[in-house]
Image 1 (cartoon, rainbow, N blue to C red):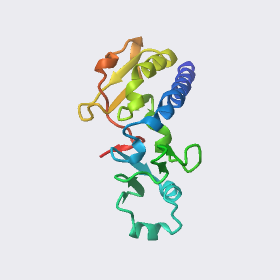
Image 2: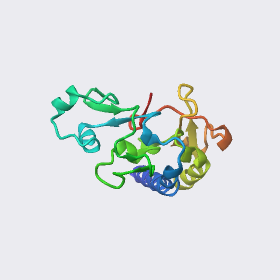
Image 3: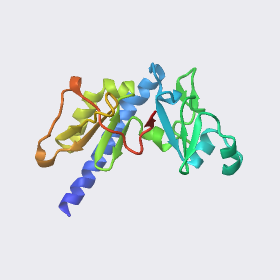
Length: 193
């Protein structure tokens, strides 16, 4: 039981670090980002029908909507994947989200670019703020949960880095900030095209 409570405390600590990182580094950077994720050029937004309905202000039935899908949305397996055209909630002039802080904001947007995936924390390095502040995030996570392992995947270079708590208190490989190589994506991340 002691270990389970420790695991829950570590998860809450990691969640607090992620929320703080999003609030202090990611969101303030969005208005000056040179390659906003909301433009949906590099990321694919994975949406439920309820999320599509809210973002795209769909008033028709699901069946009618699917017969006339915009070219920037693909339906597959009950999910909708938006890519290639800016999110309708993205104000390109102000470079801000019109639905930020509302129930309409999709979960994938709330989690991006740092999210928990089981016992791991994954960082999507396509985000300029995540890349720029990765050493700070790493240090905050270490302070919150202890020594970390950092995993990378050759299939996704310069895209993802995943941190997990090191077994035995020692990391198997923790590269310097300059040599950080990313890991593979999770199901909750915006998908790479």
